Image (cartoon, helix red, strand yellow):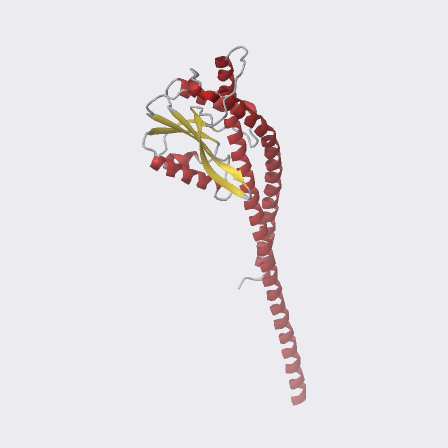
Length: 287
């Protein structure tokens, strides 16, 4: 059995670990709140942009906008995989990678991936996914400029014909957890069933569609990045909370073991003293 000094050293080590996990939990909580605040500001604008696009496309009117025209036969599919920036967030990254692998197995067309996030460059390479480009410089709370660089690149991929379909793959924050989802980004497909209305366009319908379609793509990408980062921060906060609770339990068990060892030592010492005293008493009685 370990001695008391070894147990004390172990307790000190676990306490240091607890300080680290507790600090990481606080940092993740602050980042989560900041990202949620940004996302709550973006979502209303994104939803309004989506509704305007649906109204402009109501009535089955044709359009010549490149972002809204299908390429006919789909030959190349681009999956935009949004992963975390680092680990220590439970199964967050492994879950989205597993989901991406399932999509790849079901995909009947040629495909490639665009990876957003710093995590798992070597892991993704080992899975055999063809990565065309990476965007590892994303911050923990994505900003509009970072999102625009990605959306501009994706729009150019579609316009140039390098991709006939672009799909976002990410973890959407839902309730007390995350849900892996895939969402078609391009071509832009407005919802059907929107009631047709008469509009007067200024300057013209095609110019408005071009601008609104571009804004729609930019907002969908930005919202996806924020959703993914919210899920990552929440997963890391949950993981660090569990780790902190585990260290508390470990310290309690080690303290109990140390007290048991100390009590056993005291009992042994008392028994030795009593045994020595009895031996002296018996020696005096013989004399």
